[in-house]
Picture 1: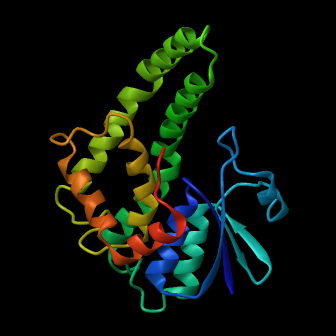
Picture 2: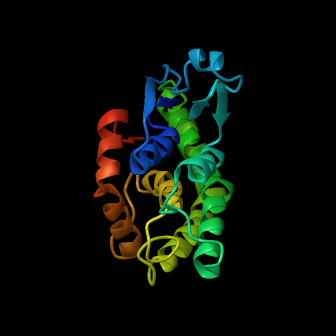
Length: 222
């Protein structure tokens, strides 16, 4: 039995969604974030890192969403529906690139932005103007331009492709979804500038497996 330990508003939604796409049996345990918006200490009893996702397989605790996705594809995608074949070079290259891009490039910027947003929210009123100024400076010098370049790359990929690895939906769309949702928070992505990206996001959220995952694990909200 697969046992997913799912934390609300976290990357573990990816694994919940993939499990629904695969149609396999699994047990789900959901967790709430604490007052500091962190994972509860109870997750450390499952794995020393204490963050989600954690997928228990035969009494072994697997962590890191990218690795768990690849594990599930290897062992449970028996019809090879969610990863391009090795002999399809263009699709395989796109799949592999964007699978790594999600966590190595775009998510660090989005996490940094989220952290500074939370710092401002938690700041006492007397120092809130200072924390806002620091956040603005960090965003202007380290985040905004780099994030805009990455979003443009993502938009261009979807200009000629229905999904990130080509014309077929794959697990890399699940991996990329969390980043796009995070980028679309706050004022939201410009509808004209990122039309392809927003249309892709809509297609993801219209999938039956996505709806089931959202019903079980909650909507991602930052």
